[in-house]
Image 1 (cartoon, rainbow, N blue to C red):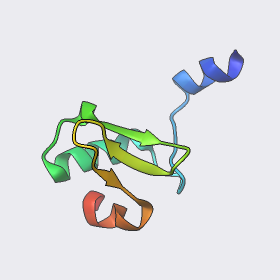
Image 2 (cartoon, helix red, strand yellow):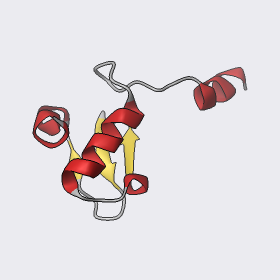
Image 3 (cartoon, helix red, strand yellow):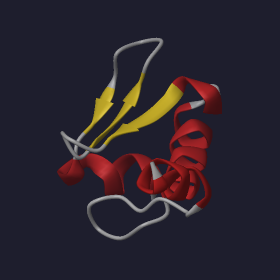
Length: 66
């Protein structure tokens, strides 16, 4: 239970230690999409636009979120 509560309030980092919220903001800005459409799938280490199904894999991140 404590882990769940902690995950709600502690800033989340992606596989490379980057702040997930900042990366999602960059992806939304760069792709011209809504920020609420993006999520980070921790188990796959990938960012996904849940509306379009677009996935940004680690090797593509510099292209879309630079």
